[in-house]
Image 1 (cartoon, rainbow, N blue to C red):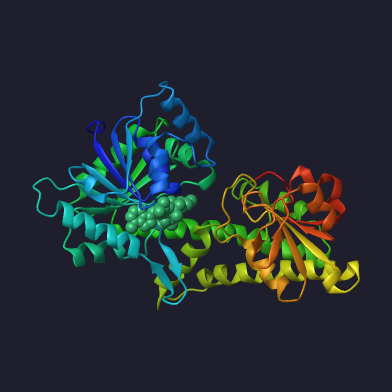
Image 2 (image 1 turned 180 degrees about the vertical axis):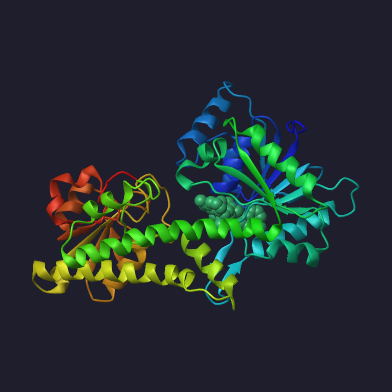
Length: 414
Ligand SMILES: NC(=O)c1ccc[n+]([C@@H]2O[C@H](COP(=O)([O-])OP(=O)(O)OC[C@H]3O[C@@H](n4cnc5c(N)ncnc54)[C@H](O)[C@@H]3O)[C@@H](O)[C@H]2O)c1
């Protein structure tokens, strides 16, 4: 296999995925990081850490003080991708509830711009779609735009450890056809060379198989979360100890003692949208399980909301006098965003029953209003003002008020 490094690489869309890839690849290649957000681009050029990813921040600091060689340039001008060997696209693909499909317009518009820029040139870049897309998207867009240099490579990183996951990936998948198989192998080699893990499986498959691998992987994770959540719903309803049952199941090495901690529902940017997209892709293909995974999450959130309302009502008094404190809107303790966080839907369900809520969320400004609830970021004031506290993930800071905390974080480890 050829050694692939020292390449000109452009990355378009510098979010969680794009930034981690940019930092990964800038160690041995020349990276142009392209985004429409001027603020992000400026921070990249000045090497100012701006994420909650400790490893990315460390690399920025080391690059700034000269301890690390790092070839990265930020820009908002997409024409700067001209002459690149690889152009990686990692723009958002949000789920559009009206279309019941991903909105891939950002990926499409970037591809059209790249086509205009590099269309006439002799040297064609390898264009890699890293965004999660519907099954069939890559083939269709290649045909529609008459661009035969597009391949697909799904990304599996986690937001809270994005760079680490790129350095130590479980596998690299690239989707291609016969004509692009060499480009696919080159891209897999580029990613392997950039990683620190010694042995990495690279799996080359068709465009649609690679798109499907991503959606099925996330749907499997959602299934696992839903399974332990439904177990927990059952145990709580019947007065059983969920942790005992989960331990009893997960000591079985075929099942495994991980990713089994009950929560208020699966959430975050990817699982809710990717499960819905996979369901949409099934279309007329027979299925029972995929739709059940999507429905199960709603059922879980409704159950949690009912439990909270029951406890709040037990406390007594008029619902107007009860203050439900929401401890963090993020899905995980170390996350810096709450995109599609399950607690948001739980809050909405509680709000419709007329309960007042306050929120402890340091990501939001103190005193601000979030969907009709006030942000109280002085933790002592928050604890005092809350009649009942709900926490998707428990935190030791709540130890002294744990009697008024409702959480299903049984293992307090993730
Ligand atoms: N976040 C994750 O954990 C994760 C993991 C695997 C895959 N993915 C997939 O990767 C894709 C990107 O996700 P993300 O979380 O990094 O998104 P993000 O919202 O964090 O970042 C997207 C970036 O793209 C920029 N952008 C939007 N339109 C643009 C355009 N036309 N030109 C240039 N830049 C543009 C935005 O300003 C933003 O900086 C999605 O398809 C997502 O499903 C995400």
